[in-house]
Structures are given as C-alpha cells and as structure tokens.
Amino acid sequence: MKELVEMIAKALVDNPDKVQVHQVEGEQTTILELKVAPSDLGKVIGKQGRTAKAIRTILSAAGMRDKKRYVLEILES
Amino acid sequence: MKHEKREFEGINMEAALQEAEDYFGLPREKLAYRIVKEKSSLFGKQRKIVIQAWARDETKEEDLKAFLNFLKEKLYLNGEFFCRDSRGNMLVVEYMGDDYYIFTENHGELLNALQYLLNKLFPSIGKRIITDTHGFRRQREYYLRRLARRVAERVRETGEEELLFPMEPNERRIIHMVVNSMDGVASQSEGEGPIKRVKIFKLKDV
Image: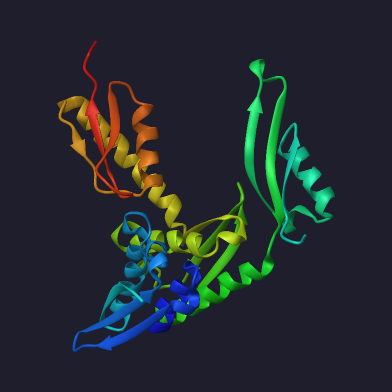
C-alpha cells in the first residue's frame, strides 16, 4: 500500500522528490507515514481535509480486502 | 506550441469549435475545451460564446489508465475500469465487475473519493472526470429525487422540518431542485465542510 500512497502523493505535490512513505507494521494496524515538504502539506491535506480523507477512504477499502487497518499519518519532512 | 491554450469565439458552440479545429488543424476529438463566456443579448437575438481550447494530451489519459490498473491491483478488484467521453466535456470512468459494491457502500463513498482524487491528480486531461459503476450515478439520482419528494410532502403535511443525511454537493443540488419545484416547502444546506446536510422546512402561509 506504500506504493499507492507514494504514487498519489507524488502526483499531488510540487516537490515529488521530497515525498517519503514509511510503512510501520503493527499487529492489527499498518501505519503509513507520509512525509512531504512543508509547502506541500496543504496539497496532500486539501481544503477542509478533503484530499486526505479521499486517500484514507481508498486505504480503508483496500484494508477491507486484505483484512488490515491502514492509518495514514501526514508529516512534514 | 503543442500545449498552447487559446480562446475562440462564435455564435454558438459549433462555430467556436470549428474555429478551434481550424486553428489547431485537429479534429475535435483531439481537442479539449472549457467555456469561458456565454452571452446572449436582450431578446436572445445576438449570441456569443467564448471557449478556451487546447490540444488534448493523450499521454495523460494513458497515465490515468495506468493509475486505474494499479488501483485495481491494490484493491484486488475482479473487474475492469472503462473510460468514455461524455457530453459537456466529461470523461466517465466506470467500473464493471461483480465486486462493484465496494464502490457503492456508504452512499457511494469510495466512488466519490475516487472521483475527487482523480480530478486532483489528472487536471491536465482537461475534462471533468466522473466515476461510476454499473449505472450507480443514475440510480442514485432517481433515489434522491424520490427521497426529496417524499420528505418534502411529509414536511408540508406535518409542518415539522427534517434534516437529511450528509450529502455531496452534487447530491444536495438534486434535493434543492426537487424541493424548489414544489409549493409551500423550501430547502437549505446546513453544516460545515463539503459534506453538508439539507434541511427541508415548511414555508409560512402568507
């Protein structure tokens, strides 16, 4: 799922080379840490968090398929 | 030169598109456009339409298809995504497969999320992207129209206002249209953010 988040984030931001995704595996949840340049934070979050919410919706759909829970965390790099 | 955007005008859409075709030397299937201005003078005699047109970037549509294939793999989907042009400069991306319910659950939550994201990711296609699955959009519109009518009739009878469930902007538009066409009731969106709720209430007798 790391690649999917990376692909989406890189297409959204102005500095794709600053995009990093770390996948932290837990017992039931998998945390996806998305790091982008500070100036790109707004791009991945979107107005009223709509972009971030759309990415989370896609992740939860994927999670239902492979019986996992994906959590997206957005950080500054 | 290849990605130049330019304005064209004509007395109607046909004439404006003709101008654009001549300028770029391309048939209209290879052009993307948006309406800049649409003017009709008093009595609607003199009309003018201004469009902005550019040569369509087909590599971007290939990118979109590659992204959809990648998504298909990640969501373990059995079916296929089909893309087709639609009226009003729209590109319809429709998923066909026996596991389509994944897109329609929670009032089409995934379908709407994907539509929002695709428009963000591929603005360079130059068309509004609409996502659909097995005709869901049309069924949903039919359902929303019936819902609006039913609730509005009840509100008119009881006089008690009712609040509908949270909806996307295009869904709220359908509700407002139906309620506005009815006498004695009105509707209003309430709440913060893009997913607001519509309130239907009875108008006071004058």
